[in-house]
Length: 136
Image 1 (cartoon, rainbow, N blue to C red):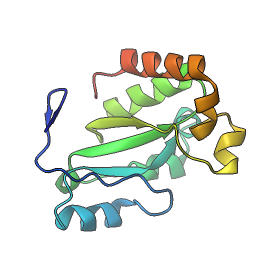
Image 2: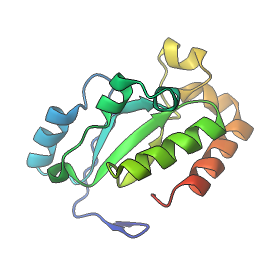
Image 3: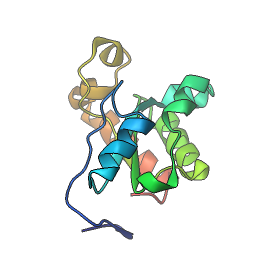
Image 4: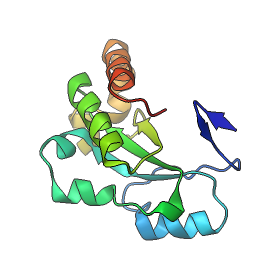
């Protein structure tokens, strides 16, 4: 399978799970043959404010590549900046944007599944992130 120029050897993808898909878990799943693993969801605002906890969520090791980092947020500009930051860190091969989280804390920020009610904002986020990074 190929996503843009990224060659993926296998058919299984680990879904992002907050509080679960940390580095040790991702490495374990990768050892079991998963083709692509994904980080826990990462806050675009947390990246903007250089939150140590947020940056820790993106800690990775070469043996878990390809790695997808999932971003969540509700503002196109901050999502684009976060995507560019992730690309510049060199930790991810794929940027995943969260449009499905139904946790109240995320919805209150207008992110996750709340974006399904805001197609114009969702479109603006996708366009901004796409413009900010070459990653698929």
